[in-house]
Length: 310
Image (cartoon, rainbow, N blue to C red; front, side, top):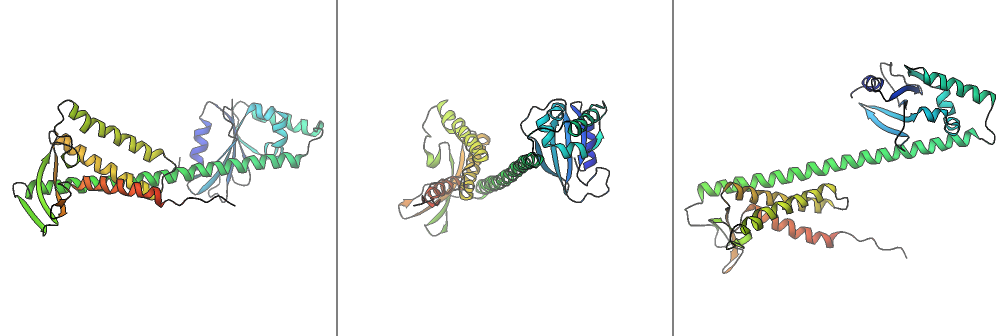
């Protein structure tokens, strides 16, 4: 919904809605609404404990109160909502029940005011509930926005990792394969094309089938799915931890994609070391997983711990 009019139209066509009551200075027919648009939606039955919602339609803040016909008839609620019910503008009441109940409420307030009832206290109660509902809704909106930001950040890191991994492997396939050993930085950084049918550094290459498929393909897929679920739904991750897990997922997807499209093989071509102390032959995805896991472990010690108050 992009406008107040569209919201009103949708509510009027909802069979569960008995009526709509505007209160406050803004009206749905206004060409331009300044400030909040306040609306009471009266349902046939209210199945939620939430009494009010606060959200935006375009740039207009909307305060939407959720009530039922029983709420109007209830004397406690009516007392708390005295001014809103009696001073509101009914803009939708096809059955006429809303107008009838408000008229009866008006008569009850005139003829038999409640004993021991302080309207200021009732108003304060409603105001407090309304403020709490508004804060709760704003917190939910902020949490949703933060979650979207996390998903966008994680997706960007994963996509970039997979793209870099696949592009470098494609380069290795075209220009390094069958070229022997290529020294990039003396003996410290060399390139050598290898098709690895095992895991990291060739581990597990001798595992017989079908166990190799389970260990090297199905198990990593389950780990990636679990990591992705944890990344999206965990509320305790720092920004560094989110980035690290995204690197691990991106590297994992790169190697799994390689294994699926290359008959169980993963292309390795990077090698680092000094003399006989070397890393073994690996690829960009292996580096993403390694550095992601390393910094994820270090992040456990980098997260500040709150000291208890003396």
